[in-house]
Length: 318
Image (cartoon, rainbow, N blue to C red; front, side, top):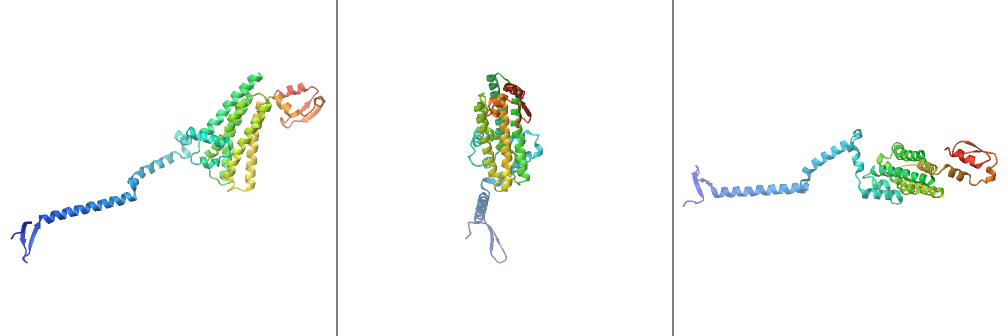
């Protein structure tokens, strides 16, 4: 009886039938195909677990893009606008938060709060706004007193801009090379720029032409600004700096801030007010005598003569 599944037969020398079984062949093909599919599926599953969502294939272009961005930020690309763009990557919320940190000096560590994204937007906008307000308040005060003095306003502008540019650079150099602290220069500029926030309130109020209003306001601005800077510099320096170096740094910063406040006071007050504040404790009878005093404020040897009005006229030239 013939086997229906055998299509062709051949007999070898031993008498065994050698045949092509089409049913067995198709079954073997299907089984091997299924095995291949299972192996491919297992391989894909293993790859997906190792690199989920094909992350390995997609991260390579991102890495190259990041490297290109890093190359664009090298120091020798300072002439490109892209070099500065990363320091202006802030929104209104970020600027307002940092202004609040500069206005109230007890909101944590300013360097840590801004280390990931220090900006130059606030440090440029705030001092320039203070300069504008100084011109506005100075002009308004001059209108009230009927005495214009644009020279004093120019001194205020130069003082503010020189302070915000050179003091952070000098402090960064000292911390980098003397104290081995590797914070970026932009972080120092960011701190000093936002610490000027208090003067956005103080300077407009100095338009009130009364020395007993202007002097306390400027003193308040000096204290708030100094506390903000010193507190954050203490967080930065106290772990890596000796106490003596820390004290010297703080004393120098206080003297510089005090000099800025003194310049603002001298520029906002008239010569008559300064003279009155310096010598108001002297009696008029003593001033009527011939005295020779050395003025520590103006650095000149001033000879007082009998009339107080002549002394006032002399100081009006300043």
